[in-house]
Image (cartoon, rainbow, N blue to C red; front, side):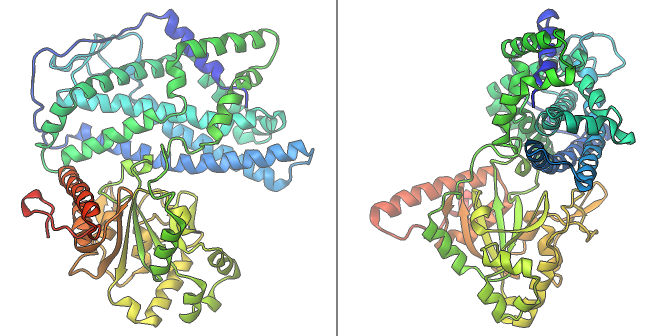
Length: 570
């Protein structure tokens, strides 16, 4: 695990020796953001590229975990001096082939707009100047005006390229470096598979390329200038965004926020921008190479400590903190579990996870409660389940959910690493035990299916989380949307089936870690589902006021009726 910071050190050396060509010209005067026109072909192309990157990142996060787990298996065998078996070799080569395939696709996105990081052209962020030179075929300065449409689109391109590049660096550090640290695994990867011959060497040489690394550094410099400017202009920007055309501004904002988050949560982000730290590592690794160490070995020497820190948070790019319901008191959690019924739909919100950033609407994930052993026996389902599923239910794993590794069973306690929770229940189905049993058997049939990274409801061989409700409740007409040629169903589409006159009703609601009961539960749920930031903020303000008032007077915690002019009303 000792091989990664050599490349980053080369970046820093190039950065120190080459004069910076990135400038920032302060804002001159005041100009309001104009309303966006209809999406142009160029904008649609960028939107498709961001969606493709999201899909690749989702696949990558799954691959990282599997690669890290398998590396530990091989390391343990090496420690015990055990021979690798044929299954080990098959898994090793399949994993590397998957990595190489993903790398090609992600690198295409990184390279597509990498011209923005070329050192031959000066890059200037200049509000109100008007964007100039926004073509790879031009030779003059690149002037990006974040206040005009072309400037904003160019910033999206730059961020897309930077996010893709950092994803590649993170993949290498987290899931490839462990294999490089072991000569046996390294030799097998490079020479045992003709399709992969010298692949690790070639990829490492690519990462050691100073030109590639310098582009990443320049991208980070520009990104940080834009972030500083955006922070200063936040109030004006937010005011202008509220006047955007239709849903286009919201879609653009979602793309930008996703890319910002992906960049800022990169394991390598701080390392690349820290010149002193990486330069020191470069000197140390360079000395080892001069003494005769092979590049692969030297490259990993200084990754060991970094990787040990990363391994504790292998999903570093996924989650930034714990959910507010994670440490729910045990008696409260058990009381909720006791109140749940088979086939209840669980909806959650996790603003602390990267994957939540790009999901349309308020809710970000859907799961299904399958019930306890006692309930499954009463419904006549228990005896029809494979023994392995029976064992998991007995262990308390009654939450069915589609995660990146696939469809699986988890405990409710595991599920609660979230901020918001809504439980919705079908109004009629619980009254028909035979129908409940049929639905449950369909639910158990989904276990083991792979995650649907295409988010396509017109395929049944793989499943995304919100598709669980779609494939289990087959009698319901679920709302869906067409996106990039695919028919999708989002968590908010599932949530939209709950309401006072809808087939599902809200049974339980937590928002921002706080339980919402009484008269405002349905009103709060409807407000969240509208996903209007001003409405939600006003609702939260009123809830805080009511909680304080109720606490002082000893009244029930939630029994408020919101004023009709607040947008938070029945």
